[in-house]
Image (tube, one colour):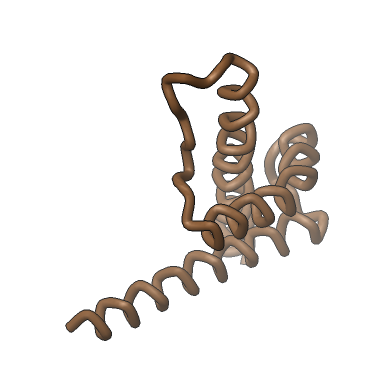
Length: 107
């Protein structure tokens, strides 16, 4: 049973990564539907978000490493990559969805 659930988890992760990489392909192929400043922000942060996620997954650390003993600068240093990565995921997936929707309507 555990082996089967590990297989399902692996398939789900592969599907999520494939969708995220596809949205990045649309983002970098100059097919932006969103306003240009959001596209530019997403293009800058997209590789960093993949790098940040890979580090978190490899080290098996929490995605929000917040502790009550942290100073304000430490808190912001830990929160900014999370916020930027989540915003980039949302923007790139929204851009991909709008691009596919626009292509399907125009076809």
